Image (cartoon, rainbow, N blue to C red; front, side, top):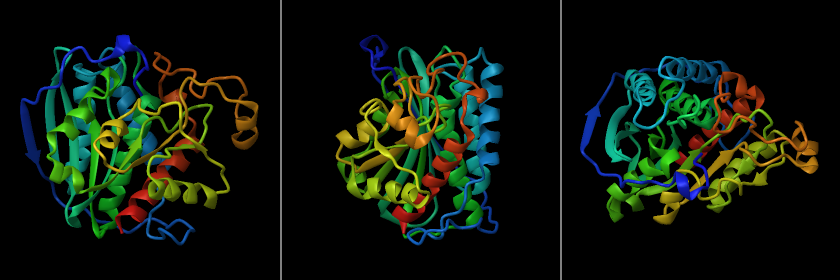
Length: 319
């Protein structure tokens, strides 16, 4: 999630210079156990071990590339290559969208699952870049890895939804939502109107977690709230990151948006600790935008619940 500081704003506009299209072979396996809920009974459980394996890979990439995965750096390119290879092997049609920001080349990765009504597109996305000061495992390896594993679960189950599914990993979010804004601006009004919903996941494994739901679109909001209600977990409306992540360009273009968030540098209140556990008076993520945002900076329970909620929403909203 980008800092809410003018000094961190974009200093150079995003300019497209290339588009690449690649494909892969189909993969299929048995559907994982369904959630014990009726609304989206076909949604699989997302294995937390798989999500954490992706996080470990992103940590290794950062460690091998100067300690970060930031825009325009080798760590970001390696992160994108890792995600893309997984998607290509699973049968997605992937597209790398290239742009320039702050004098460096950036990339978005878009992955489409074959089939579904192309006039009704459900998108799920997250930013893949970190800040330069750390590896960005919670911010936003957590969202990126959970979205990746949800996409791979689509392939494993052979899911054929009524609506078309598209997944995205954004570049240069930390410079001011550059990649997602470029993508939205690259679409004509007709293509934008085909997106029936964009789901954003930016920081979902905070070590002192909260359970926050975007309140932008009522249908998407209710979908997430229903999931957590089924677990007996009270949620709150997400306010800390409002307008500070990649849903904002979609919302500004009139696309229905929603998402989940587990908290950044705001401090947990006593009322929140009573609902969710954790430490009163401490930030939801004490390592936000710091070098200690490593694989040790993840709450497994929050990551597991939020990952399953992503799959629940993707299945429910695409039927």
